Image (tube, helix red, strand yellow):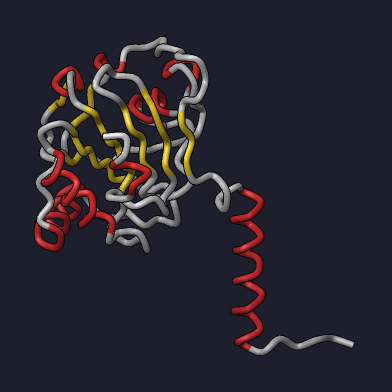
Amino acid sequence: MIKIFLPYQYVIVTLIGFTVMLLLSGFSYKKIATNTLEKSPSKANFYDLKAMSIDNEEISFEQFKGKKVLIVNVATKCGYTYQYEGMQKLNDLYGDKVAVLGFPANDFLFQESGSNESIAEFCETVFGVTFQMFKKITTKGKKQSSVYTWLSDSSLNGWNDQKPTWNFCKYLIDENGELVAFFDSRVKPLSKEITSLL
């Protein structure tokens, strides 16, 4: 006997499949990773990194010496896009000692398919973004940017191999250029988990 699924049953089956996929991928438990090992200094210097700003200007990370740095992979069509607001508030409150850096990426369900120009316009008009935004990059795979290679390779940063699990994952670097923590998308920019480390 052939079983016929009604439209709502397809939705239920799809949701169950998606939930199982998230559980198997570790999305449900990889919330925060911090360097709890005995201090293992970076093997490659964070301040040697460079990236192109969304306005097409080369930015040397050397300018962030003496500040903590929060790096976030962002997207304009994601369920977490509202976190731009928290990133801007974090920048407003702690900008004297923390540099917030946004890296647009189209790595998860094509949620950042726009051009650099449209991304910049969206960020400015919708969220009033004034923190440093960069050109669209890739956070994983063969075309991974040098910034995300450093962030997710323990042979370079000293301890962490965690790549972004979704949009709006966060990496915190201390004022000496050492990676200190990874936070998944669910950890908001102004959460105690982040602000307690600033």
